[in-house]
Amino acid sequence: MRSVKKLARDERSSLAELLGSLTEEEWDSPSLCAGWSVRDVVAHHLSYDELTTAAMVARFGRNLFRFDRANDDGLDAMVGVGPEQLLDLLRRHLTPSGLPTAFGSRIALLDCMIHQQDIRRPLGRPREIPAERLVPALDFALFAPPIHARRRTRGLTLVAEDLAWRAGRGPAVAGPGEAILMAVAGRRGVTDALSGPGVPILRERLGEG
Image (tube, rainbow, N blue to C red; front, side, top):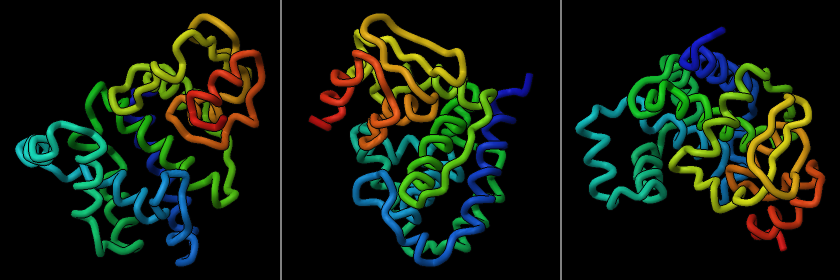
């Protein structure tokens, strides 16, 4: 079995391959992250890799240890970094470093997987995520501090039908593991791929009505 750090490297390699194929217009296209372009998502994703421990503590400290504000701070620091520079930075950090290595590199795996789908879905670039990467990402997504999954998944049974993976108790939400992951991460517009009596509850929690 491959280590999580190796799985994270594989996921980052897949992202690098995707980014290397994008046009300038695609880099400027909207992602699933509200208000962020593809370039913004990539810049955010890489904004922690080269931080020293002291710099990371300083970033979170001046943002009152709020992930959303620290993320915006990191993105501001990457203003002006273009696609070629971002792709070069990603290739130099295929093996994650810094904060993304926390929780045994599960942050790196999960963050890259979600953000790669944030890019792929709007661009119409679907893929099949290897189960050996998707299963640990799903497991960790339920508990990862920045995801806040509990408020979306409480009282629901999540069933990834393509992975023989399930978690929770209550009305079922079933479908592809990738769609479940993105819903758990709070992304809207993915529940059409899901079915079961728990879907209306999940949609309401996602703000989809």
